[in-house]
Image (cartoon, rainbow, N blue to C red; front, side, top):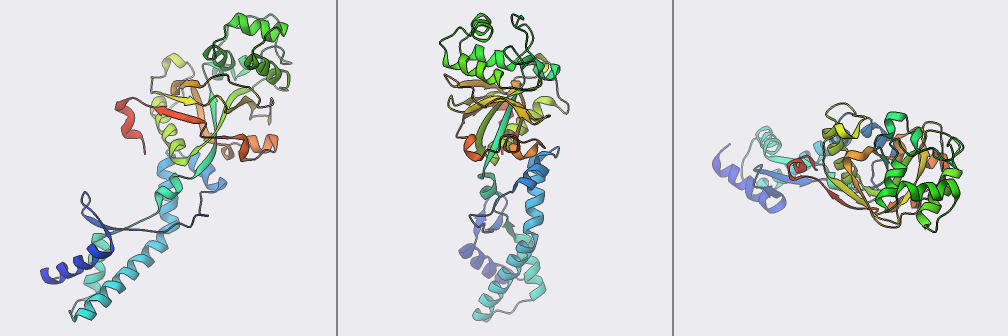
Length: 318
């Protein structure tokens, strides 16, 4: 290809495509209809993978492959027409190769990353090592009145973050003696559980990007295998949960739980080291929707007010 022909082609591309100075490629982004989204089946496949973000990219690239080829062919046709109008001779195969090597047809990734998903943040301050039975505190059917609150329990931990001691919890739970709306709601939640392995769920709507970012950080934290002792998990930042978010006890192994009615009195600062899992609700066989028959309104939109990670880990974020 002559330099004059290459210059003419690039003039057309500069006028009709974006140019990325870093990659030195012309870019064309494909269009996504506002109704296009990653459905529940795809979300489940993505988050069952060891690298959810890479799985998402793979699925989108596969789904858009024919559109990418069609767009490249259209661009070749448009450049061909432009050169014909100018009366410039060219080799069609050489032109196709040039377009393929110098133009990147990009999938509308941001469209899907900005999609809102219903996410369950499951807490673990050490109670996963006990199969979460340490959250079955009296007046739960499986709890014992007067028992010491000595074992790791996410429910007890949340109470502490809300400003309550174990003595406050004992008075509220064992003796129904409290004026706290939070402790009253915890007692009601426990009364309405029917199984013994309930974990603390925080239910929020967040973007797919935010959910993937949290998973990236958690995966880095675990280093390939889950550490059941929180002291063995490295510090990797925290998130802030809005006090009006839906919080409750859920047993996703048996398809049961409480009323999802724990009422926080102030925002909850949750270290990422205390997160057991962060997944879209559809990823579990017993999802919250299937257990309770509820819709998206149960998940608090904007319930995750902030995510803060150490500077050294920010390269993991999408």
